Image (tube, rainbow, N blue to C red):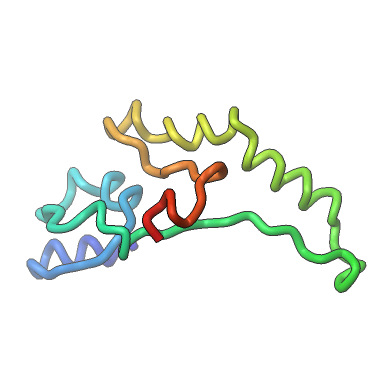
Length: 105
């Protein structure tokens, strides 16, 4: 994505990108943000454990531990603040306690 941003900048083109990659490369780009905050652009990630009854060889305990770690309020706070110190704004939005309606979906 970083290379694609560079090409778009060099050609004066439009590009769709994620905030983290844009901010990490912003100093070397001649691009401006034209649209942000639209729910149609929301890129939601979820953590899901695999059904151990259907896939008995999976490490279900490890997957469950990871899922619980990701949704833990302390981890969600880290996600919320990640990037603020370096870029002046968060790179991600924690959503462990959010419904689709809360996110505007």
